[in-house]
Length: 332
Image (cartoon, rainbow, N blue to C red):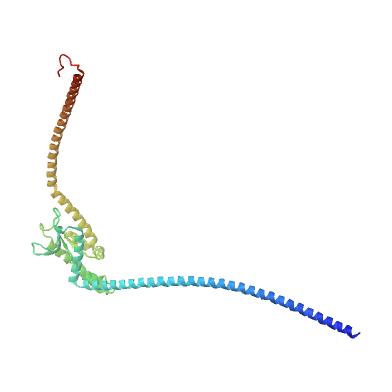
């Protein structure tokens, strides 16, 4: 083999190698470009998905924070309401304790009953129909006297109700022996109070034949009727009426109706007098109306006659104008 041929083969091989390298390089470049595009596309898709996911997460977090903030706001408001309620409960507890302290004292308890009685009566009856701390002719002073017409008469109302022993025997923390003793003493207190009301405030004819014992608590009124029926029967026999605020309201409403009926009866003679005067006025009106009708009828007759005369005069003037007068004029 000659040297030129070998050189040609070598050159041909080198050319082939260059071509192959170019093709490989081109293929690698194409693959690199394709891979780069795919990577960029995947990166863009990933970024888009991450952006969407991030926005969704942010929206959900924002909604969650908003709901959480709203929930905390409601909790704070309710805590404020609870604080206000606790404050009111504390004030109410203080008021109850103050009221209990007041009711421990007999004089203060009597004043409390009188104030409650005064509020009930003043809300229903007119001022002139009752009097507080009214002195009777027997020297006794009643808490309130209701001025009612006959046959009811004036009714005395007593507001000094004994509650000391009632509180003791209704207290569950008190021993059984103390409760029984207080219950027995309460029965004695009520009997004595009924007798005192009968002796002091039932004083006919200055007062009615009965009086009212005002019990300033519905619970005490109910307990007396449930536990001590003999005291209720005793009060009925002694003409003492046991009343609670509710039953007293019913009595006062009835008393107001009685007062209104009595006031109507007192004004009945004035009503009859005015009716009699009204009858006289109507009689005179009827006579004057009859005269007016007669005058109107006469006036109508006169108007008709005047109209007839005017018509004849008009005819006369027409005849004169036409020179149609007869030898003898007509007479009416």
